[in-house]
Amino acid sequence: MDVLQVANEIYSETGMLPDKIITDKKEEVRFEKKDYHLLRKGKINEETYIDNNLIM
Image (cartoon, rainbow, N blue to C red; front, side, top):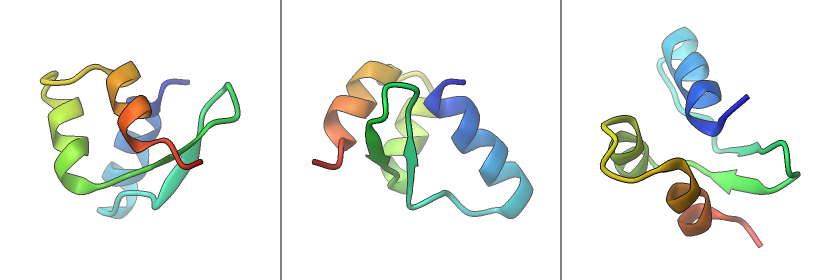
């Protein structure tokens, strides 16, 4: 399941974004509302979003 799909499902059910999610590659990715909207609108792609928001 991709990052955007997970975030969209959580957002639609709760009205809130998760603090972080773990990708299929076991990467922890934080969520910020501003960046999420860029991802959702297609202004950045998922790979860029993950690279920019990876929790080390």
